[in-house]
Length: 270
Image 1 (cartoon, one colour):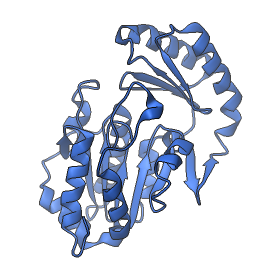
Image 2 (spheres, helix red, strand yellow; image 1 turned 120 degrees about the horizontal axis):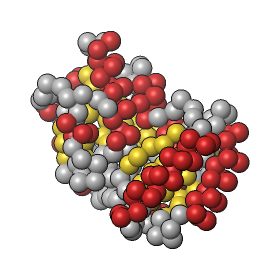
Image 3 (cartoon, rainbow, N blue to C red; image 1 turned 90 degrees about the vertical axis):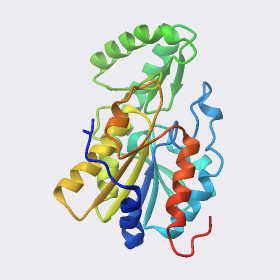
Image 4 (cartoon, rainbow, N blue to C red; image 1 turned 120 degrees about the vertical axis):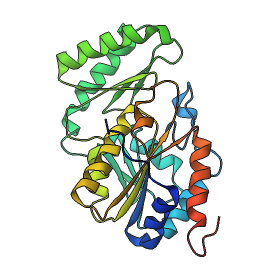
């Protein structure tokens, strides 16, 4: 997890972006950051106003991307009208290129293992646990029954050890995925390589790795400006918020902050 840092002034962060827009980028988690958290993951849509902000950002800066645990096909559906937004699903194991989902070759051989895991989860875990099978990742949601957290985590840890999988704990969910070198931090680190400034918005523990990528780049390159924004919630504690430059109270505030940033660009339409 990224460590706390000296406070950054909002106007300074915006100035670094506006001064070199072609080499600036904005990166977003999806659930809990630009969309609400819901019991039915398939029913989730971005909050009001955020799509207009992303559309405008694609015209103003060099890179806009969503980096999510969601399958790339889900992201492609939600952002079909925003072709300028780069989409990374399943922690970067999938990407959307020219409207098509591409799966990392290193990950593909794990598909049979993950299918068996999803079947085991559906059979062995209590019915109140929502088993979300994303082909290459299995998510175990216990939002409908928070008291089952211990049982879900014990089952998950046993399967991870047995099969050599990676566990990711999040907001009322445990995710199991293949042991390949992909996470939000590795994706963000690669994406910000040509940039001089970048913002990352996230709400969950996995987003801390993206914060780390920004901090590491800043240590290596003092001319780089990394802006970490945490969307606070009561489910993952304050660890992410303590590591952020700015903290918001909800996905709706993400849209409001983006509006403030966009208005700083000459000629912006928002």
